[in-house]
Length: 495
Image (cartoon, rainbow, N blue to C red; front, side):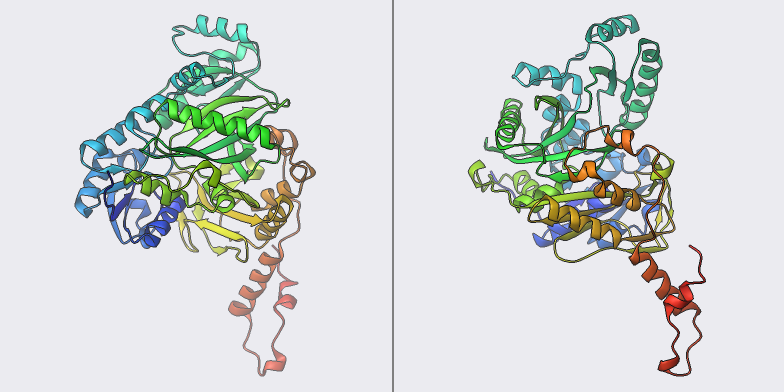
């Protein structure tokens, strides 16, 4: 049974909220933004048709406040809520609350979110369905001694992971027994702060794996398809920073195996809407189930460019009860896409966040270039939230073309006032390891851990500074012929 969705509240902020609103506008659907007091002038608030303040800057009192968000939807007359990613996107209680309030939750059902949101339960359930999993604990270990015994049995190194959530939070690599107790405590504390649950589990550490994920779409009529894979191995602090589609390491045989496994697993748990099944792939191309993200992924644009499918549009259609309008045989990927995440962070200082005011923002454009942005020049990036500013995505006829286009797009990007990883990303994409498609999850730690900016100042930045100097400091010339060159002025300027 289908229903009409004519107004959606986006329970999120920043670039993902703006991106969702773009599709809503194309579909003729009104949008409602929610914002905390510090986000009063944020880009997503300015883009939305309506906006409702839901509390102070602290996330637990605003973007994680279910009561405030439901009340905002009721106040604005929105019939559906899109959670984006992060915050309440994978919160089963929130999905359940929406249903109880008569609101359409644009995502899977609460029971599925609850099952797959607990990584231990998901590993256990999906291993029973035949998915290969990495050796590790499945829950029930009641004491430190039992965990120590289980870890010794699987062998070091191991990884301690949060049972709820993801994004690298609550994750610690342990190389020897003496480190385990402290790692468990540290991971549990971080997980509790990030996800409201301090439960953790232990998994065998795979040496230099590839992080490959499979995007699925599932409707409420029993139809499930996959939209091939994404390569997400370029990571810092256990978090993705560059993604691409398709993966340079996946051949047709492996693509079919992983795609079939993801579709089978989705059907087994009754999954609906968009979701991502994540796997680790070893050197021999054996793949192991890692986790399921029951939401829209940060890196979804690369899939959109290669398949031509708007994932947000499909999410809304499925939530409205409509069946998928394509089958697996209709998925015909073309070309290659690369995405770089642009954060307010300093790659020369351990990628630490660098909140502050964006003084200059010049974003690239041109054929095959897409920018999903949630900021603007003059905006102050708050310290309270994830520091992602935008996502830069390029498309080309093949991997080489997409990568070359990305390098040029990065060199055209100018951000001043705060640190960003743009110079780091440029060097990463120009590296031999990336060019050969040989990046693994530990490449950045091994090859770029001591990175410092060495590249010359970009032409885009030089041009901007020259123009700025001329416009602000040059004395108006007596005639056009006497107009001073901004490049001459730049010669005396120290950057």
